[in-house]
Image 1 (cartoon, rainbow, N blue to C red):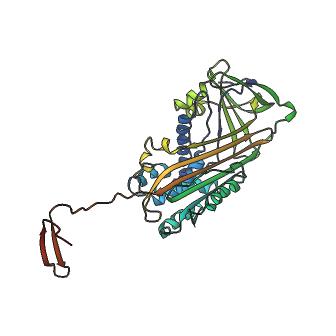
Image 2: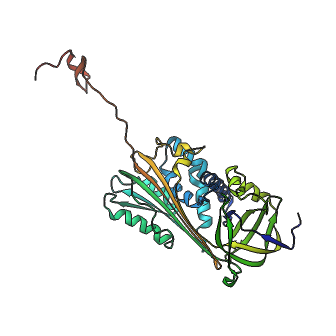
Image 3: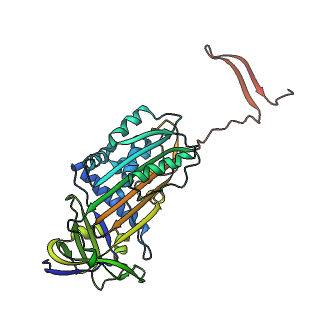
Length: 384
């Protein structure tokens, strides 16, 4: 398809996507799997009356430290996401570790007793995850964890958790901050107010950044797309919006149909002079991802019976996976932050019960020889 030299990109409800630097092949496979998971989670949250935001990378950074602690079916399920022994997650981590625009951190917070298993601490070290023992019963611990998140998200996410598990077994936190300037900034003097049509058909006023740019552009009968580069050449913002005349619900429907990524992959981008009209964004969202993750082929890793004894040797049950995302888009560039917390408490171990309330046998045994010193059938306890 030959693109016109001039095209008007309408900022209707669309999808904003980021493309990270490609790593080694294992890292690329992990990136694709991460994008697909994010699309599925976003589809479950998005609707005609509400947008949604998900950071697949932040979720991955929070799940990767769980991998070495998983056992049995939970380990098998996480390996489908992270790769065998987390190899693909590690490859992506290493591909992004020297990035200037994207800052990431992860921490594993554990009770002081019992201590983490040495094998677990050794396994999470290559992921850059900080392991720390804390007193969860102390009120200051919650503030300390939230402070850790705020510092690593440049205060875009000042608070992630409002409470800790009742009997904490583990809290894994992951935080990222992305900041990049447009290759060619928008002129604030050209920003004007205009109507934005929501997915439910209601109109609201937005501030639209306007400019004429020679940028990669693609169009089809149903879609318009543009790629806006940042000064950090490894990144770009990709905006996908319905074509003029198409319904305002189209972007959300593409997510629900799991076709949004396929649409982008099928579009052919060519350099074109494009008249841009893109709204300034200031978005925040907090969601619990655990119910969604319990569905599909990863469910065994998040089921109530999932086994994470490999962390410190005790049974741990995941109770919540809370993610908060903040996105700012203005004339100078983009700033985004995401933080994810995986919460686990001490699983209630199902104990066997022995109740001798009916006639029973009693043997007093000399263990070295197996000799029964006394053998009795107790028909009634007698008087004591």
